[in-house]
Image (cartoon, rainbow, N blue to C red; front, side, top):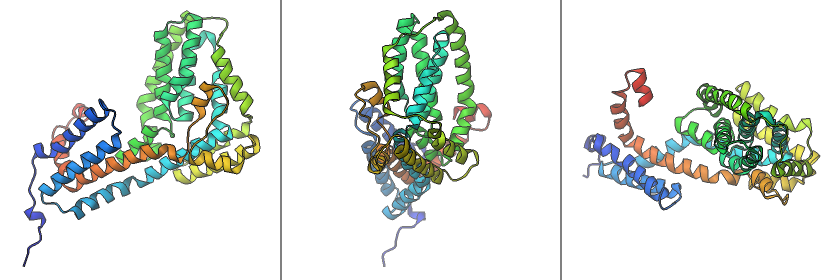
Length: 361
């Protein structure tokens, strides 16, 4: 009679063996993505495959490792569903005019005397509203650089204010793919994650704003001349009808977050409200609203800067991030099921006995 392998017949790996998958993943991502620009999803699948081969070497059955993958992805499913809702939310908010209105009035806040502070604040506001730092830098950032050149403000401080504001807004935005992916990996709630980040990010942002205020006083001016800025605001005003009711979708999301009600129903309710507002105020058809929720809003204003800024959103826009989550958690599931992750954590935690060592770890 053939004996089936038990846990006692499995090989016990040491730290060196446990580190092999992490080193392999680091090399794959560093060389494959960093040099050859191969998509990370493929590289993470390759890392998971190599980890699975190591699992077979350690006498684990495929069924066990498969269960580890399923369990790992199961834990991440709530956050993955939130990512889908984020795509729906962004598309509907743009179609309804909520995000264009936030950008429009944000740009109207520009004060020549406090240019650096205003640039940082508006870029933060835009990144929070759109969930993209690169999109903000590539559109409004370019416009602000043009304004800075016209005002004679050094490009170093101007670029610093733009990038700082854009990245802060990206980290604080519930629409950012990275901000959604981080709590998935840590097993926490999206809004709890943002709330805890605020303790470290907000003081740094406020300190930066203070520095920009002091430095910006040296570059006071009476007027701002920017054809790009005027073009963006006039285009938004022409193609969207603004009304205070367009803030309702934002109020719904903030209410659900403040009262700690379920995130997904709040996002879907907000998206529904934005869709209704799109029909009422922007005269959009129901199929157009549904398309914005599915594949994203496609702006056709004829102005490249505006089209690039607000052509985004939709469930499909989140698929790449979700594939990263699926493949990364597949890798992590095998690492956890085979015990390799626990071996690494046990060794690491031996050094994490003081505050400084925990932070370093």
